[in-house]
Length: 498
Ligand code: AMP
Image (cartoon, rainbow, N blue to C red; front, side):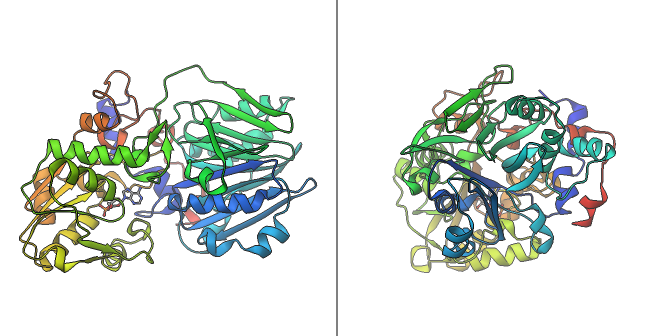
């Protein structure tokens, strides 16, 4: 759709969603959201839900609760388990409704003002918001708002919605909220809290996930079903693409302000992002990943002694590959769980160190063998380069690399952390050049149709793709207003954070 030569040329420009906020080669956040209405332990359950969603963002977490009189907020850099304790949950975050957020962010103090939930006092009362995704016209909207006198407190794209909502002249909450939401573009799953309502919204294509659950008489919203499991909530249904749900003491109301269209959830949720025990769009993420491994074994068999996953992301696909090929599965690489994900380290040289800290060879499973290493994706290539040479150093005879997603050739603008196109290995090199770069005996990726097959479709519907797969195809499903705008809108607050 947006795949014209002009649009492709624009892709060569740096990613404004990364640069404007985080500086070159810094990474944009990925997030998880949660919300609960009508439970006496609202904040404690939110902390548990966020703990289950911790894989979606590990640099900061926050909760806002409403105690019937006042809003209470706790926002911290760091892990949920380290930040939330008896003192702040039980003594401070009282009330029967709460929303919470986990995120990746830039490191250090400057990020504090971006830690969510963001909160604003509007003419009709307090409003807290948590966002998973990324707004692709936030810089453009923000520039107009600032010119009109708005004063922004954060560098986050999410704050734009607070300003749009504050400015609406409509009478009813849902009209004001809808008016604001209809102005934003991109990917979003929001959980929002007012003194009377818990609100959930999913973008018109349903790019980012949001689900509804039930815990006794309480309603729960979360990014993934694993957050329901931890609090003992039952999964009720997905929030539909383009749907707004408003939960009050009187129950739940649903609104569909957008023109109806087919959903296009992000395929990367299934490949990497979601926890394997989550169910997304009725599919077990674990089973889908295993099927991706099976499909990879069909498309790219290897003559080898042992199948070795790159832990943890490659494990389900490696099990599928091993079962399909009949080659034994072994843990030939051991992961140290006490280091953060390599991906969040800000500088390339630190990231490389991170890979060494994180993985070590299990020599007895590798020595003298021809091994197949399986991972879910190659982004910059840091992990595969290190691990191929680690396998040879541990005495492997041959190292074959198999990847259970197609080559990532295009950056994401919808809230997944990807570098600029020039830093994506598959954007720079073809498969043979990548193989040489990592020093593997062979290298192969699953095909785009293969990934759809693993998801239970016959093939990709090229006229109406069932998912958004822009990272592999370059077909962005929405306009990218900030990116295609002729100006480079750089507000001083944005560059101050660099
Ligand atoms: P790289 O080492 O840069 O090629 O990144 C590939 C590794 O990062 C793989 O092991 C993936 O599982 C993991 N990965 C892929 N996408 C992401 C992401 N958005 N955030 C964090 N890690 C990722």
